[in-house]
Structure formats: C-alpha cells, structure tokens
Amino acid sequence: MTANQTPTTRVESARARVRELMAHRESGVFLALVVFFVVMYTVSPIFRRPFNLTTILRQISVTSIVAMGQTLVIVSGAFDLSQGSIAGLAAMVTAKLWKNAGLDPPIAIIGGLGVGVLCGFLNGVLAARFRLHPIVMTLATGAVFLGVNFYITRGESIIGLPDGLTWLGRGLIGPVPALIVLMFIVAFLMHILLTRTLFGLRVRMIGGNLKASQDVGMNVERIRVGIFTLSGFLSALGGIVLLGRVGNALPQIGQGLLFPVVTAAIVGGTLLTGGVGSMAGTLIGAAIMGIARNSLVVLQLNIYLQDIVQGMLVVVALLIDQFRRGELTWRIILGRDR
Amino acid sequence: MSNEHAVEMRGISKRFGTVQALNGVDLELRRGELLGLVGDNAAGKSTLMKTLYGSVIPDAGEIFVEGQKAALRNPRDAQALGLAMIYQDLAVFNNLDVAANVFTGREYTKRVLGITFLDKKRMYDESEALLSRLRINISSPKLLVERMSGGQRQMVAVARAIGFDATILIMDEPTAALGVKEANTLLDLMAELRDQGISIILITHRITDVLSIGDRVMVLKGGERQGVLDVADSTLEDVEYLIVRGRPDGSG
Image (tube, rainbow over the protein chains, first blue to last red):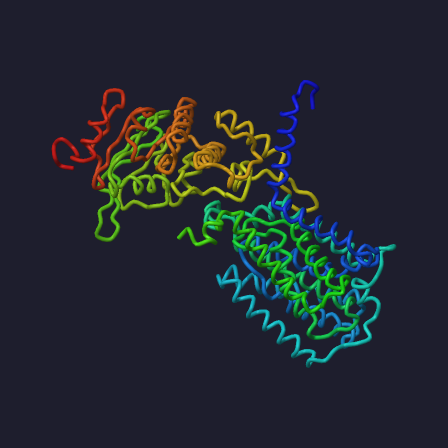
C-alpha cells in the first residue's frame, strides 16, 4: 500500500480482496463454521473444554475420512452409496482375519483395506466399463457387500479385539488421538491429489464436462475405476478406524455412516452435478455437522434432535447452492416466475 | 497441387439416408486468408466443415492440407495436421480456470515419486504469454471460465486451439450467441490471427461479419457450391443473391 493512496481506493482494494475471498466456494461455509464455533464457545462453558473439543474432532474423523472419498466421487459426477457397507465389510474381514485366521493385526488391517480396494474396483468397473448408473449400481453393490458381511459373520460380533486392531481408533500419538492425525493426513493427501495432480484434474474434467473430456482423448474408464477404488479404500480405512472407536467388531458397523458422509460433502460445498468441490470444504462441512451434534449434548437438548438438525442442514446447504448457481431466486420462490 | 492453399477440398459428397447433404463440393482456403462460408440452413456448411475436421467421413472426394493428401478418419487426424474446429456448443470446462482450459489434454506435468503432478506455474506463465500474444483481454489465466462472458469463452477456446499449434482454424457460428460489442471483439481477434498468418474458415449467418473482416466468401446452397466472391468487390446484395437464388446459370 503506497502513501499516496486515497482512503476510497484503500476501501476499494479491501473490498476487492474480500470479494476475491468470497469467490472461493469454501469461504461461505468457513464463515458459518467460525460463527457457529464462536457462538458455542461463548455461550457454553462445557463446549469450550479442551476435552469436548477433542471429542468433536474424534467424532468427525471417521465421517471425514470416508467423506474425502465421497467428495472425489461426487466431483467426478457420480455417487458411491456403498461406502457404509464397504466400511462394515472391511472392518469385519479385518477382525475375522485376526480372530479366525490368526493373522497379526497389521496384516489383518492390510487385508481389510484390500477388501475395500476390491469392492471399490468392482464398483468402478461396473460404472466405467458396463456404464451402469452409479447411484442405483452402488446401492445394489452396497446391499451385496452388506450381505457378504452378514453371511461370513452369521451376524455375530467379534469381541475382545487386540490393541493392534483398535489403535487407529483409540490410540494416541503423543497427546493427540491417532484418528485425528489420520483425518488430517488423509485430508491433506486428498487435497493434493484433487488440486495438484493430473489425476485430480481429470476427475474435475470428467465431472465438469464429460463429453469434452472424451473428445480430449483421456481414458475416462481408467479414471473412473481409480476414483471408485480410492473411495473403497477410504471407506475401508474408515471402517477399520471405527473398530477402535466402537471397541468391538459389530457386523452392523458402518451402517448409518453414509448420510453424515454425503452431508459433510454437500454442506462443504461440493456441487451435486459434479466438477466442483474441495477436501477443505468437506472437512469444514464435517466440522459443522460435528459441532451441531455436540451442541445438542452440551446445551442439554434432546440428542434425538440430531437427525432433524442434520437433515435440515442438508436442505439449507442445497438451497444455498441453488441460489449461488442462479437456479433459484426469490421470484421463483414467491411464484412470480414460471 | 498449388502451394498457396492451406486446404483444398475436391468433389466432396456426402449422403445421409435420402438427403444429399453435399454434392461434389470444391473448396480452397488460401494460406493466411479468412474465408467466409455462408448459406441458408441445411446448405451443408457444417457438414462440409465436419468432413474437413474428420468427424464426418465423405462418400466421395479428396482433401489436401498444405498440399498433402489427407486421410481424415477422426478429429485427432485433423488436429495432427494443424486443424482446429471451434464448435457452437463450446467444449470448454466451465469449472476450470483459463490455464487448465488452454492446456486441456496436453498439460505440463512433472513426476515426483511416481505421481504425475501438474506444473501449474508453467501453465499459468505460458497461458498468460499466449493470451497477450493473441491480444486476448482476459486479466488472469487463473480466472474460472464459469465467471466469463460468452465471448471470453470463445476466446479461451481460440487460445486453446492456437496453443495446440493450429494453423488452420474452423469457426462454426462463433458470434451467434454474442452481443454486438463482444462479437466485434471476437471478430477483431480473428482478423488479428489472420494477420499473424493463421488461415481461418468462418461459418456464419451474419454476412456482414464476413464482409467486414473476411478476404473471400464462399456460398453453399442445397449441398452445392454456388460461387466464391472476393469481399473487396462484393456487396451484401451480391452474397444474399447467391444464397437465395444460387448460381447465375440457374443450376444451383
């Protein structure tokens, strides 16, 4: 800033900077997160306890890890509704590999992750080579994965898991819970993947303009398979972290994961029509959902309100998105535009 | 084969079912000229250009690019010969920035630990240089295309084509969806490119566009060539007469 600038130009350049900031899709949700956090921090002494803040981070970590995969899928213009089932199957296979096959926990975990990769690869092939619609297809494969899970476990839990299997979910790295560190590592790597690599660019291209992507001559099939495979891997990782969070291996683990995951991505500004979305946004989305849930507890409101709050947040996020894209205006809402 | 021609098409015919879309059409595009291609709807303008771009295979006829006989089986063959076609429905990525669009399909990358990273800085620098060389008025290569006007998007598409070392540009109704001011800016750009040595075929309904910046104008009617006029000594009426009535000998 030079000395001869008049106050008006200074105001204008500040305005320009604000406008530039707001142009980032994440700015809106980030602002919402900050406001929400500050309000809760101010009104609730329980909320601002370090223990409570750590709890929120622990609670959102599995959702976030899986949601990073979902974000990648949605940015490519598809959906992966089988994530919860993959998480459950991978967790149970991991537990069984330890219990029944007698494998060391690290090997069992690699086996579980392998199952996730395999499931994701299958989804990818069905979507890319066989051109099946991803929503219905992953709904179906999700049912298959869940079925396989209950078939091999006979619906029975495996209890008394060793530390090696629960460490990811409940271990500490110094003073910090391992799963929080894991969440940030996954978020960072996925952010780099989406924004800095050729693969990430291809994902955004496919989601933004499929026809033009094909005209460019890129291998759309291979990229799609890669996307679903990665989604399967992250789902499995989330499922295995859940083993430690829950402490036992329950076959229904991972059920109920899908809605918060999709919610985090949508609240975080991922465009449902594809092409646009960010890992930072998804992380912010997960944090907003986490704080919302936590507020119900610390304000001693009924925890059963959480589904209502969660559902309403998604609707609000969708509305905001429609407004931003100009698909929705007050004139349309008031019925003056047909 | 004359060497002054960037493109020569000889006796191009194409039938779609019962419709004879093109019937023995000849076309010569001189090197470094701007040739207007005009005619009514269904005159065969787009089909003719698609045969040149390899996206339609003609039933008969020959195509020469820079004096060499060309076998064009798909657009990639055409691109390899330095041709680029910019369609009405633009193949730009609205969700990406200008640089990503300019470098679509030939991104600069560097491999680190087996992972292919984008060389963003190089792409930003080179797109900035390209934009300023073409005198395209887009303030930054980091701008998202979705925030741009229709005319600016066309210019991004043009920059992409030129960035691919295209020397022959086919533009299909580029000004159709633009306002007057934007259309004029785009026409200025096309004239500028022509002056830089690019050969351009401009398909358009706006005959005045061709008359203002073009060198010659070719008229198609009913899939047949009606004539080629020099812009310098033709009027709007001359061109319109050919479009409506066809060749003076009445065979059109």
